[in-house]
Image (spheres, rainbow, N blue to C red):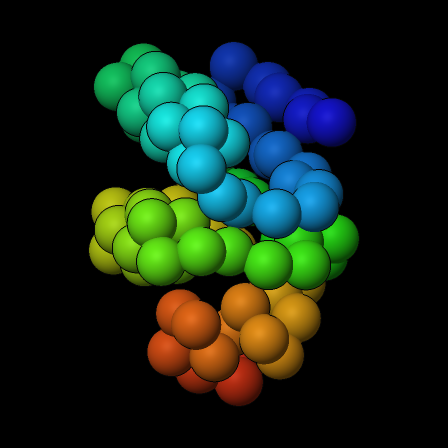
Length: 85
């Protein structure tokens, strides 16, 4: 599920960020960022991310992608500060 405006996109992720889903998420985010849109990932329903998924999320965070509603597990994977929880 996602919502968007001309300049901002919010994406609600669910389940696991693993295997082929890492590439799907990377491609989607890359396309949005290349178009100059701000991007927010709502990680409320993400249960697990493998090494590649965690690396992608860390990379996106460095690229100013907002991440909200992280579980403790995902926050620990990303080494996020408590203000992201």
